[in-house]
Image 1 (tube, rainbow, N blue to C red):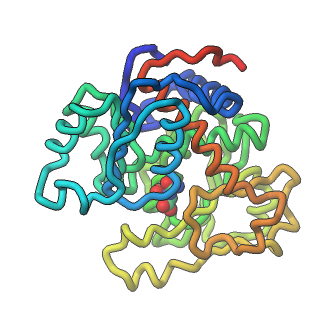
Image 2: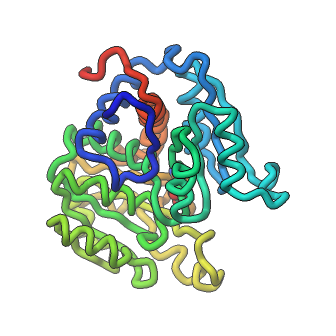
Length: 311
Ligand code: NCD
């Protein structure tokens, strides 16, 4: 990727080379988690929506790179609660920090922020739209567990309508000839714009309403998702769909030996706890990979060369 500073707001704007460079960097940071590459730099983390893993792994990434973190994890404690606009908040924080990591409930917020400041913006999730840093840790997890990204059958299950993690992952996979299986109720089906994206990019997909043994048997990756309660206007609609798909250990008998189960977490009821001890369960390691992927993203966004990205 270019050595100058730049924002990272959407995976759809990334080239295959950029994605591969970030994966090489992730592997480097897994081997060399602690360094002084960010010495003297300040990173702001602005979270206008709840988060555990994303914020803490970004902050761990900065700390392990020798940088410093400022920010807030709850916008109600910031001047947003006094009526400050996002525009003003971003312009102010840009005075204090070398890079801004932000999560916002409005789709397009990170893109918009990147247009009002020269300080690089890293999107940590914008509404139901994008979650590109999650995608990088998902790709890194897939690569680590499968030994490749090319030609895999990836089954996405649950809330495919509002889930930003599946939207970003789907877009990033266009470089790697995936086959997708989308398992969702009609209410939470993959939106037409993403189905069209698949067709335009020659990506094979099937839509299913049933999480059947046939679908499990052909999967290399099963990507479970939480029903995104906070995006529902009507709580009764959420109640109707919240528990439609639960993956249990008893369903894994038909799985291929290389199957891995991913989930961006937090989980509610989508994965029974009896799956946690199965060899297919990979979601906790996946979250650990988030630190390395975010070290990769931060150093790259700041145009910081790392000693050796080839190993
Ligand atoms: C995801 C998110 O925020 O979109 N969580 C995460 O960042 N690991 C998924 C979710 O909240 O369900």
